[in-house]
Figure (cartoon, rainbow, N blue to C red):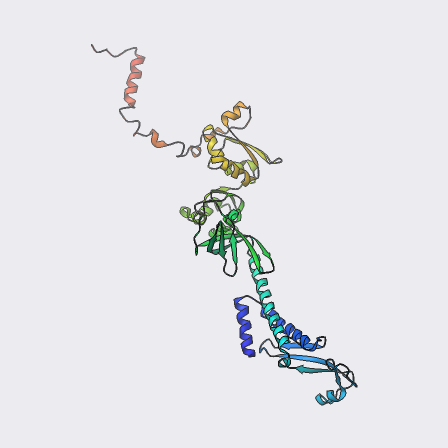
Length: 405
């Protein structure tokens, strides 16, 4: 029986992550309770339990007296000397009590107490396990769709992904495995209550930490994230090693790393930019893919005026202001965007870097298509260098072609 008890405790410790020592203590304390329920007193009882064999002993400590007035706590000198001949008045005698002598109610009470302790330890273990995962991601399995809420199984506990924590446009099917970000873990007395999210910026951060080894080893840091779940995310990264490109590390070869994150987020767009301690440079990077002519930043008031080329004003602002809004969240600055024409009309003075402005980087394929100026459009029929040269020579000599009759 004791061997089976030890095996049962080992299984509980392994499967439910409950400390075996706490279970031993629970058995000992509930045997004391059983003794009290049976004898109405427990001040003089001790319980010992062997952690290896499972053998336990219950001892009632009785004082040796001449005349017994309380048989639960006292023993006569004559009875004591039957146990050991050297006992004298006032000595303490340990009398072993057999648990089989306990009444049915006392035994049932002890059993219930042990089961209650097991449940408490299980809840405590689950709480501690998931509390450690707070602000981290876990994989859950969709159980069922309850209206606009989704029941998720996290392995040992269930949780609910409420509507406000779901990214717009996401749809899930039962048995589907999804990644979730744990925002909070509470102990409500019946087990851990886990709050999960698919919209939190931390989900994007943790996904990149899983995909990018340079982030895991600390070479690359994620400095800031701004997210509108289901639509677009901007992330600023910094490299502690000058030989490592932070953006390139996050993108991966042929975009493998960023694409893995995009797939998990159901094709949410992700812009990765370089972080800078210089607010002007950071704001310029944050407004990517729009190009910037000048940034006038006020670090004290956290405000910035940005001047962009006229033809890129709409790109800088973004659809429904999304690009500018995310850039503001990413940098922590209130950003006012104006085109060059607007800046000139309002008399705004700024430094204009002509070399950067007309750099080929600013005129990429999206806005400047070299194919439009190749020989396909300007062939010999429409653009003849020699013909134009001849006309120029004729004009300089004051000669004109003879009109046909």
